Length: 394
Image 1: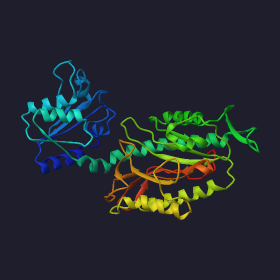
Image 2: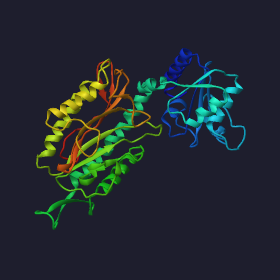
Image 3: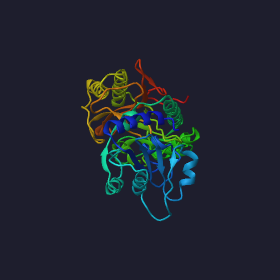
Image 4: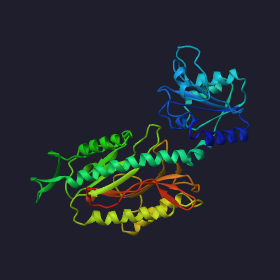
């Protein structure tokens, strides 16, 4: 059984019983977080169907040719496709239910592919969605927390390496015709330091730490602060806020989240004030991580602290205003609990806090992000790392 199966089984059994349903069905491939939660990480790269019947049977319907491999890792019943002819996971799920004389309502997640729902309906089943797994996935088990701590520790290694590179970078004065003074570019290992070069350094450090960067490494400086997710290859200069924002993934699919902003040779101006606002906002948000409190309070208190330091009110764009981000983390980079809606925090919730200040006029921003688990007494950081603005080596 997977580390999460007991909790998933209880949630699905309750949902099936409450709705008087015949079964629960979900369809996805190995990249689908819900399917990994239900069936484990060793899945084919083509869509499979997971079923749980009202009698408690767990079935996996893999694509043609994948049944033998699935039996090695899935501890329920693997239902082989009847032939190598092209068919879909939805067809296989409907056929498996029909073969077991299941009738009536079939529960699915809201994200089940439309085609799969159509095949179930054509087979005579009434399809209804359930959010039973959302709450179950949000409350992490001890085994899941162990994985999250490990991947977050690897994220620390990535940020630590980035800080060391920045701390050891040399100055190279570049004259610009359109500037009154020279701009101090940074050089690392004899080459100009750019956001792309620093991103490669960080990704290599994450790989050495045993996790997959998963395309989630954001490094921004100068123009790339407008949308760090676009990547870019901008020069890193002294005095520029440099964002290093990581969300690596382990072999089972669990994610971390850690971000820090560094400034080489800061003059203590705008970025120092923005950094103070962001770190105080981090503390305010963490203080709200208590069971029974509304999840939205985390976002609200984080945002209020930023505003109290004189920055713009919280916005949702990357190009102006300020935003204080918070979201659940697990098998998906962003999952429940949501910090912008209804619902209370519970012990076992894992939350990423990422207060951010951005100002286009200043040419950059400041962000810190951490991962914490809600406990019976409050919260625990899954890994800790200093929030200093000036980079140091070691």
